[in-house]
Length: 272
Ligand SMILES: Nc1ncnc2c1ncn2[C@@H]1O[C@H](COP(=O)(O)OP(=O)(O)OP(=O)(O)O)[C@@H](O)[C@H]1O
Ligand SMILES: [Mg+2]
Image (cartoon, rainbow, N blue to C red; front, side, top):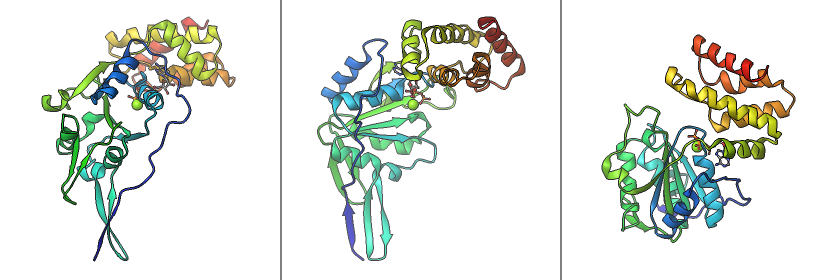
């Protein structure tokens, strides 16, 4: 049997500018990290804009973007690649990480804490001065092409007691803490993403702030900017605002009757 090596597959480019409204200096820090070959870690609650920031930066820096959602079944070979048997022999297929390393893409590992330690460890030689990816199965050592950057993200509030990154992994990244945007910024984002008018967006933002305050009363997940946009889109399509809030904002958050009741009361008080 012969072994062939397949390296070339085209990596998706981010063609149109993804809208991203910065809350602080995250765009500048990200760009500096890119210029200095530093890996980036984005921390923040679900729906706060981590993925959108990466998409925007890939466009801004003119780099292709490869996104890998992490889970506890993700093996090192899923990232690096594997030999596949074909009718005429065995062929090596690059995994998405190897592809990004060869082509100088931004490689975004989403929810990195979900990945197993033996998978995460393959990132180590890429995130220090070596910038290499050793591929044990082929004996090749791939040097990262110019423009390659590793970006990881996770939600620090979620399963923190169960899962954490090792210090030897954490200290290979420049980390940025993202959070929900300020009221003024969130209003602009909702309007931009949904086409909602000022008063609808304004009312949704004030409602979100009241619901987020319920965190102290046991609400595990508070409404994200993503949920506010979904609700605004329903309103834009003609769903009455209270019903849109029940379906788009309240129901996704909790099954607990008393919490749902408290949130519905807030909706009713906001839209009398
Ligand atoms: N700063 C921002 N500028 C523009 N859009 C934003 C911003 N923050 C959030 N959004 C909007 O909110 C949506 C959700 O954001 P995004 O998907 O980036 O969240 P996330 O932090 O990656 O969440 P998850 O942890 O669940 O993956 C985006 O699709 C976008 O519409
Ligand atoms: Mg995301």
